[in-house]
Image (cartoon, rainbow, N blue to C red; front, side, top):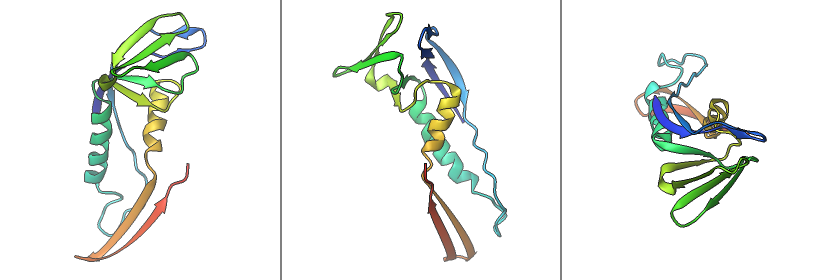
Length: 139
């Protein structure tokens, strides 16, 4: 799965120039093969991955927990002032407001994983004859 997004990394005393990437999302799932021959249904993983990529695609990634950016809002825009006094203004609709400190690939990966809050495993013996186990994943 792919998405395109703009960002810059900023931390105390440093700021990259605004730029973009053609990101690729990969999900690796490890487990035991079930009686149906699957560890997990790829179709389910693809559906979730598509939603994630669609939400981030063609957006500016805003690290809302940054300690190096002053982020404010008005009715239509997100305003960002950096430590070096550079000012950016983006339409809210063009931004992905993320609960991360930096918009790095590493923090994006952690953010996406944080979205997984539950796992369910179902085993079917026959059509409409199955058992399921569900577990909440604690942070």
